[in-house]
Amino acid sequence: MAIRVSEEVRHALHDGTAVVALESTIVAHGMPVPTNIETALAVESIIRDGGATPASVGIINGEIVCGLSASELDFLAHADKVIKAQERDLARAVRDGSSGAATVGATLFVAASCGITTLVTGGIGGVAPDFGNSLDISADLLAVGNYPCITVASGTKAFMDTAATLEYFETHGVPVAAWNTSEFPWFYSIESGCQIEWNVETAEDVVGAFLADQQLRGPRGMFLGVPLAPEDALDAGVTRSAIDEALSRARADGVTGKATTPYLLSTIFEVTEGASLKANVALIKNNAQVGSRIALALCASA
Ligand code: PSU
Ligand code: MN
Image (cartoon, rainbow, N blue to C red; front, side, top):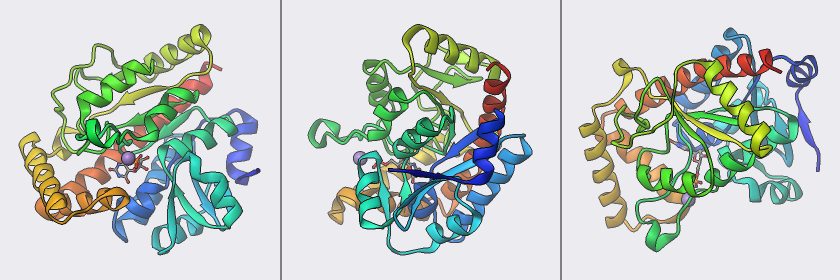
């Protein structure tokens, strides 16, 4: 099953220049119109300004695309019938001729298939707070460890269980670093309360550790947690009460399954009077800056 790689991304890979993979679920399902498309295009510009080539991943009419055009991103941002494709859904979407947004896990699979070793997003999926009953553990977590790529994000979706997610990474043998801090970031906020023993200060540090791990254990991935700038961060108390309010409204309304994330995100948006979305936009832009530096450092050490 072929992946269509855009001409721009193909040339960059052929020339051995820096490429950064981007997921598209955040565009189709994670942010409202028009912030979603504006942010997607801004993130691509930041990566280009940083000297790398963005490779947004998604499925357009049954074709897996690595390097979505601006109009394809615009289509995913506005269309109603865009599925959320995890890695397991890719082949079915192709056979059905569907259009889909790729999760981090699906994007990592496509990135690895194309030889892209850096991925940037806002937040990955995680271990849900009720995982003991629901077994809700995002497929992203397995993909982050399984594919030879550095995933750069501000932690998990804010309403996941951060400590349990870090335990899961440990069990699965996934190295986790924090960018210029000793605390794992909590998406909208800087403090998750979870300490990380490995903190990295430069892109070269991250890349050196990634390459050493490849030499020792073979093709595996790692996770880099990047906190958002203090001026963009929400107070941890604000994040906590917004999440608690959203979770209790979701329980009261009987929201389950795939509807949960969009419901919680829009409730947190409402409760924080839009501050959560502003923070989300700021953090992904910041991650794009860090990610392009890492992609460049990877090329320099190839
Ligand atoms: N975090 C957000 N918004 C999102 C996502 C994460 O704040 O839209 C998306 C990402 O694409 C991630 C996916 O890969 O949710 C994880 O979904 P799940 O938890 O169902 O595995
Ligand atoms: Mn899930």
